[in-house]
Image 1 (cartoon, rainbow, N blue to C red):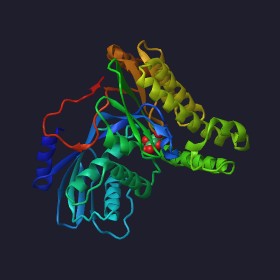
Image 2: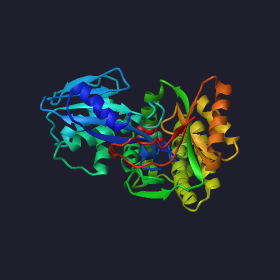
Image 3: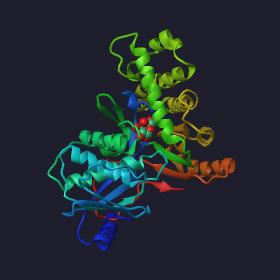
Image 4: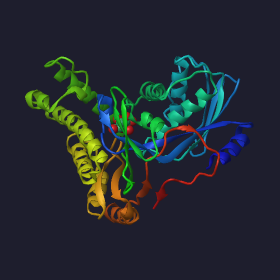
Length: 394
Ligand code: GLA
């Protein structure tokens, strides 16, 4: 729904004016499961947004509703021991708790959410919700925070209240996305290099429509394995704080002392970090073939070493590799379902999408969703004009 309609709907439900903020989802071009290892990633913000309409109230409570989800919530702003209720409203509440901890005191608010980021597809619908909520609530307070502080705050909301130990990538990308540019982000220093996407390529996202329920537990388990790996290597050399600090030589020299599973997990992170750096150079120099090859390599590593792919994602990548005009393809996001990201010659993007829709359905009997997108701009106040969708759905 365009922001002006959301405003009308807000008035109908709550009465009165509101401010509207938007935050986009993201797709990661390369650098998966590296952010929580202090490593490198390369996301872009995409043309799907979550909107949060908000009015500050003196009610002492926050009321939150959604245009898409049946659940709603109403909670006291200063409740002593809040507990998650395990639905989407936890993201809003998690952000509120963190804002309060930062000294941003709220008197109450009504919130209406309009989400357009596909849910549970690995495109960061939760980060978009957190970021748009934080911006909306901050707007009504005197508290000022820069994008980096907001990204960290939203990450803490997810880590501490929702219970997913995610890294910083999604929230950072949602806040700092730029039109036509990929962000090569160093997740330790948060230094970012903006790399223009060449005109002649499109980003095509293929949604397998599969979501495996093991995902949440497996994500935290991977993170724990990475931390164990880092602790193991730290005994051999000073200055190792995370897998980011491990070199190929460390792996060769000491990897033999790890279990097979831990060695694979560490190897994925070490090689994936190296791939991101090579991919950034390839993109900058216009070497799309080289970039695409790194995407395929990344997928292989995620599948065999990190074990976060699934048959449907593998099929999507294999099918894409056969279509003319494809430079590269890989799973994107946490894994176990969700989407692949494909780098495709712009002139071929429509044909690619149509063929993928058909071939995937033939192979799996599942009808996929395919989105052709570019790199979009990061979160901010919503613009009240009928917005043209910067993506096309097939
Ligand atoms: C999820 C998390 C991110 C990141 C990716 C994997 O999207 O939210 O922080 O770890 O998985 O790269």
